[in-house]
Amino acid sequence: MITYIDLAGTKVDAETGEASKRMQRLHQVVAEAVSGHALASISHAYTWNDSVIAVSRVRDAAGSFIEILRDLEVLKTRIDSVSRNYVVCVKGLAFPRFKTSRARRVTILETSSWAMANCFVIEAALKKHRANWYIDGRIIRRIQGLRPTGRERVRMHPKSKTRWIYFFKSDLDLQRKHDEKNARSTDF
Image (cartoon, rainbow, N blue to C red; front, side, top):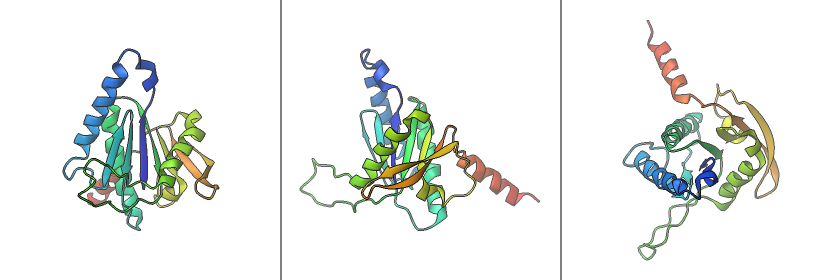
């Protein structure tokens, strides 16, 4: 799964230098958030300017998608401390890790170009909704209990087929729902 996170409204503060400070804070927050074993479902995060791409390896189980979305929700909350942002999640392939000792000055993105391009296609097609989350229907159908604000069909790469993209103007509250479910199961 490929996830794109972008800070909203960065251009507004570009001339004052505040946008650059916010970008540097974003990079620091993301690095701290995924350090060590924290947010373990995010196998790698790339940051540049006011954006983040997170790569998550999905196991073929609904629980895997929920785990990833919970970790992404934590990451989004931490990024909220820097600036308002939105998240685009696409079910897509990731390239295998590139291993070589000769490329120390090169970072090979693990994101498939189609999945990454689809993040930008979704952003362009649905930004008018000004939502917090945009999630590919191929992810949503694996998770029960989410209540999207709406949905729209978006033409995706590489075959120009349309897919439902669900959007949420509020937080997903997956952790809260998980905690409530666990509390109910331990009640006597």
